[in-house]
Length: 142
Image (cartoon, rainbow, N blue to C red; front, side, top):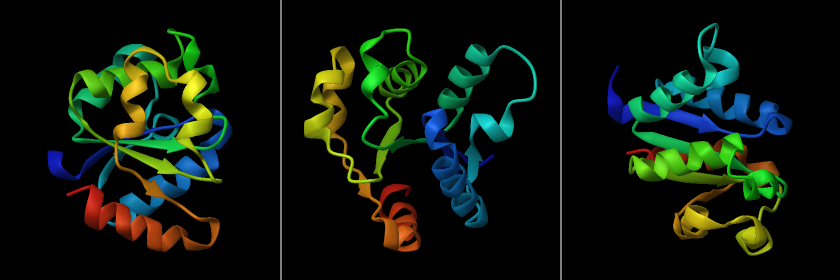
């Protein structure tokens, strides 16, 4: 596994189709991508997830307007994944879908998550998915 081309995708189950589209796009481009829905068969979910974040250079976070709402709960899995990626100093790349706006998400960004808007990310307009994925690969994952 070449660590430079290794990606962990974090997402809400409600956005599984979006996450799978990103997964397929990156796999087609020869990235080693971890998406829990695709890659976990058996074993401890928590251990596998945290180990996979640690084993990958890039942490891609799929954001829609409701993704961060449950992050006010310290036990929320998306929150835990983001915080773990921050602690490990992974290359965190927010992918912003459906007019996601950090300003509207501010009430949910507490603790370590307050730093999340400072990460440069990629806006993914509905009509420009392929172009956005090219930008992700060429400018954010290298």
